[in-house]
Length: 196
Image 1 (cartoon, rainbow, N blue to C red):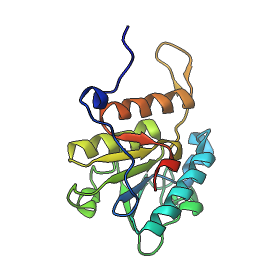
Image 2 (image 1 turned 180 degrees about the vertical axis):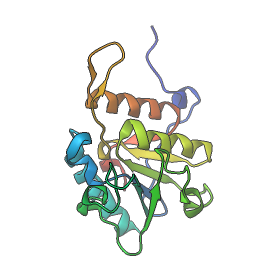
Image 3 (image 1 turned 60 degrees about the horizontal axis):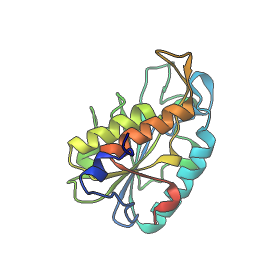
């Protein structure tokens, strides 16, 4: 059996983390819902700490910052009028930063995100919750729209899911598998420390 390689590698491409200056940082669904309640993520707080570090450095570098928040129904998950639907305090948007509410996992679907980012001529960095759901669908859609995208994988997290052949797919296994899938062709995947 041959050594596993990404489609990027097989095509002779080696993704690199972009400079924060000139990049757009999109923070997806960093909402209190993921810190508590029925969909609390096992590694959410560590991911928030790393996201806060990247956000602070992106702000200092003059990156464009866009926050995306899932908008659920009144009284349900992601109710934006409830504290649990609010963006986590440590990552709260500044007045100058755009906040886009989305109705579906893909942050581009049914929103102005593509229009606000503009032409795909600058690097796009995506971080957020959940790795296998909204981060993945957003990054995959970004490729279709022509964006060169990177993901800071350690600023993302997900949750345990029921397995189809086993009892449970752990959050850690699902997170790593989704990042590997994205790194195959959809985005460069790097730790927060790689971005400068």
